Structure formats: C-alpha cells, structure tokens
Length: 318
Image 1: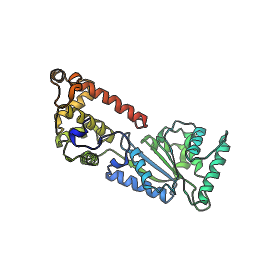
Image 2: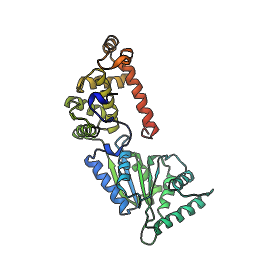
Image 3: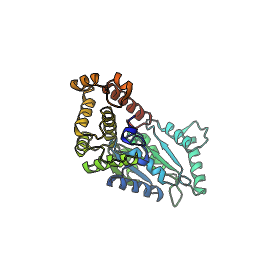
C-alpha cells in the first residue's frame, strides 16, 4: 500500500525470516560464523540461544543458504512440543526415510541405517531443533543418545539446538550432564545496541529498494530504539506501522511525533481523541475513496491483526 509512495520495491519490515534482510551485527556475525564452522567441521552439538524476536530463525535460514545442501541434508524440526517418538518420526520423514516402524527401537534402527548409508555416500545429515527450550528432560536425553550414531572417527550427524535463554538453564539440569559435556559450540545473540538499531533500519530500507535511507529521522529512530529495546521483531512491527501512518498523512519522512503516536496506539489500542476527530473530517491526500471512509486507526488495527496472523503462521511468535 505504501510502497510506491516511499519508492520501495517490497515491504522493508516484513515479519518473515528472509535471509536477504539479515542484519549482521557483531553478535549475529559471530553466531553465524560459529554455526557454519560447527556444522562443516562436525563439532557435535551446537547450541544457539537468544531472546524472543532477536533473529534466531532468520539466522538459521541464512545458515541453510550458506551450506552445500548437496552434502548437508537438513532435517528442521519446528514443533518442539512433540514427544520423543513423535520427534523421531518427524526427523525420519523430514530426511525422506520411508519408515513403517511402530516402535522406538524400530525407528532408531531405520535412522541408523539411513545415517550409515549417508556416510557411505560422503553425505552428512544435519538436525536442527528450533524452540528447543520447550523440550523436556527425557526428550533432550533421547536427543543426546542420537549423537551415539558414529564411526570410530566421526559423528554421523550434526545436531543444533536452538531456543530462548531458558534453554541454557535447562541444559544445566543434573540429569543432562552428559549432554552438556557434548556441546561443542555455544552461540548467543542479544538485542541490538542503539547504533545497531539505526543501521538495522537503514539496512532493511536499502534491501527493500529505498532511495532515501534517511526515511526515519534520527529522533524517530531514537524513539523506536527506546520502545523496542533493540529487539528486531518489535522494530519491524513498529516501523511498518509508522510507514502506514506516514502514508496516511502524506508524510515523506517519519518523525518522532508520528512514532510517538504509533507507540501510543500500540499501548492504548486507540488513536488520541484529537487525531480521531481530525481523521473523520479530513481524508488523507492520495489515500483514495476508501481512506475517506475509514480511519487510520481502523487500518492499523487490521494490519496488527494481519501481522500477528502471519507471524503465527510461520511459527515466529512463541
């Protein structure tokens, strides 16, 4: 809707984990390097942690793009709520193993045969389990036992556990001492600094084709950073709605006032009274006949719902 008005090829703050939009802060760059190194050098277990919305899924998508998928066959488990047997079944299916097993022992035999055959073909399977902080102790121990599939010289698969910081606490449980000892690499990504937040916004605008990377004023970015606490997902949602509101007001540049009003809308659920009155009496320039009949608040409400729905559909809001 606002793309042409701001000279954009595509939405710059979409909630989808598109690797093209990955902003490599120092922490993201280090974590990506460790992931690639850990997989390619077969370091055993890798643990990646980060707060909600800090870009773990985007980082994983970037990892998959960097790997040679002709060599590294990846099984990506999104649903960490599965029981152990369900998890094994999911892994086999994702690797394309045609198993008719009905017991855990049979599934493990099928998995072992698959891994041995992959090894004979000089292929190396990779297992990624997202939202791993939701796994119970029993399932984590079962995953640890999967690492016992090995030759005398090397592991037959690489396992990456990805989750929120609670995963680190869970791995410190007494019952998981053996798993903790097998972790070859640990990576953690945290929120962006104020300067990184500014560069993050400009980076995404550039990828989306913006000719004016200063579309958000410095004062606007400061307010966005303060409100979001440097969490990329929150930055995306706030910036997207600021662009919608800016388009509705025919503002070529997003200023601090508009950001403050958008934040107020997020917090209170409705526009300030004086703005609602103005929106009823003035149809925003360039917004067309539809805008003359609907308030900006209603439009933003619909977009909030659409954003949440899209994020939930791809498993980002957990």
